[in-house]
Image (cartoon, rainbow, N blue to C red; front, top):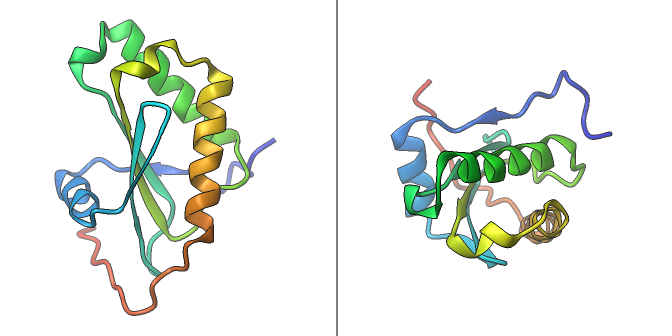
Length: 126
């Protein structure tokens, strides 16, 4: 199920990466989730989960975070050459794993249909 362990998906951590993706102003909305993304030829799939403290206690935030990480780990339709930030809003508290999976698959399919721009070069600081 999912991709092999050799293709481990890395996470976004640097503030500059978050700002670069937010400034691309490409986003999709579904079921209380906001998906900011950036596509370019030289990118590998990386993701981050952003949940504000006003969402709830740490247990609730970590539950949603674990569910999203499990979805990314197990789903096969991950878009290539893309970096995504999953921004979770308060309506997601009542979402089950199946609803989250449905929303993420919808977004992955939508992003997969978008062509990767040829002339955009993202400079990684690493």
